[in-house]
Image (tube, rainbow, N blue to C red):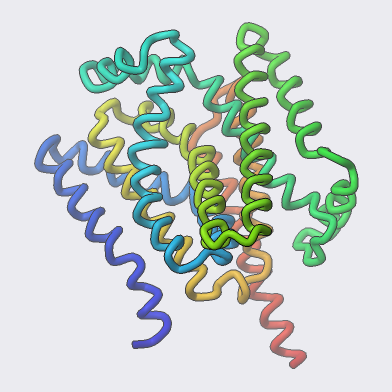
Length: 337
């Protein structure tokens, strides 16, 4: 069996799960719900492809056991935790209702739950924007980063890494500016944004500490596993809110976003096993620019609605451009060798 065919096997189970899930939606809710679920799959994959690229770098340092758990335990957390339980907890906190009451509304009156979720948009978007901006800026402000894609910008940004906590300072400043434009939600925006920054700092610290330790479990990837799932949460929360703008049927949303999440995670494993990141040197840069754009879009959505097509377009443009640059660079290197 060739390396390529072996790598493609990682998509076998998500394909089977996807077919089963879509057929279940078709049989239970009809043809319209089937196409809606399929649309949600495509949206989730398109919006989260940059997530897969960034995840691949972290996943590469994890043991094979933890890589498999990323696909098994992780997908359970992604579907049930991030896309069902966590939104209920957020709505509960914002609406000051018990989680049980919110869960009942979610399953008994999905339209009413969709409205509650929309009212929680400021908290969700501020958290996600802060976390994603921290992820991207941490990458660009790395003083040890020697490879640059957009030289004129990235070389200058890497120098900023000498300033202590510069990422947090910039993200907080951005949130202050945004919150000033939405004064009636400023407290929520700043509190949720601050939580996003704190969660990122804690996850970074825990991951670094455990990776440097002698513990086999830590080296195997528990901290990295938690970091990857936190990153998935930041990427996905706003997508959950957007899904309710398309449909309020919980089964359709869970199946559509769940299948999409499974494919994105499988793509991450595929990138690691095929060594794609090593052969496409600028792909990681493009993904972080896409994450930066997504974080900015989520923050600006606190002021004015940002269409999903714009958000998806940001990722496609940056990743596509970095892919082309990577191919050109590889061709150039091969030509000189």
